[in-house]
Image (cartoon, rainbow, N blue to C red):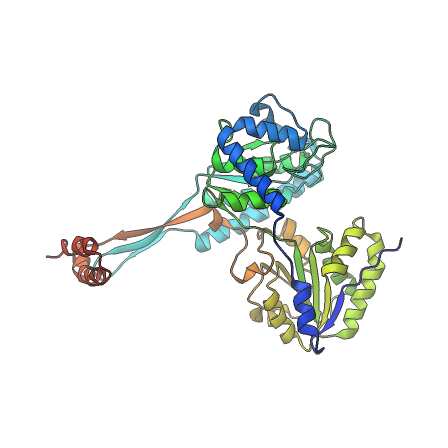
Length: 455
């Protein structure tokens, strides 16, 4: 059967553009009620029974039976053995990527993650103290869905921030396991699939401890703590619907990074980039998931035709052609705009996860772009470089949340405490003001506490 990928063709001058545009952007993030209930049951059970519940769910959902949690814990020796076992090219690629990710996040820490203070004219000290979280948990998909790059992007900024303990959970499901209430992932080993590249990345990134558990039960173990799995302060990392639901439910007990939707790419093109490059960039997100979204905005109709021709020609070469075709047919769009300025305005409305400015002069357009998870400037800056080794974090806000959210960073693994040291002279100035406002709010205790410091 010949696969056809025809993203919706739109033009901003059409009368029906707005309705069709909004319909194409729409994505329902509602979680299935059955999943929500199952997750709630799992969280409550792990909170009550701890390790015993985690062992039971790991056996039920991943098909991985273990006599105790010690059998599910990975060691530093496991990480080193995995690192030594992978090909030299993969070892060097991991180390190169890790070095660039670390370099970027070190610069980020210097720019925004340091403590500071000053004294005002009354001698009062005011400032901010920045301290790292004590312990974080990182969820890493396992089995077939192995993402060593995601491990680097989560663990390295935590290290740079100064986090002392990084606890990794990674499911290792057995082939044919039920996997309906936990990870939903399949593996290729009767012993449970331990992805060697993920373990090697754990070695490079400096993971402290790791457990071969996944799904809602892993999130629960990290959030509440068990006899074996330590309770963490924050949980980061991607997962399926069960993991996302569990992270939402434990938020407040622990912090979380974000609830991510399907992958997205938006390409702003002026028609000067080879059409094949842009077609492949659209594929790079479409191949993730049938729900992923790939959109092209361009003022050159002939160029859009050329990109569609490239899609038609290149699609049969892709191993994940069926996923790409469904993604492009159901959620993709090729939009003809009146100008690059209009394209930038539409991009800001979408607030995409990944935004490529594929133009001869990307810096002309960058100031107009205010809502995006990451902005990739110029024809040679493919989104895939950002996914693996450019340096900035690839954990990005999706589904329009770039309007108010930021990429994962060093700041996600730190917290800030205000510093206030009021001098005697400062108390004479601030005290009457505080007292006046406190009396106005009917809080006499506040007012009198300030007044007692007055001469």
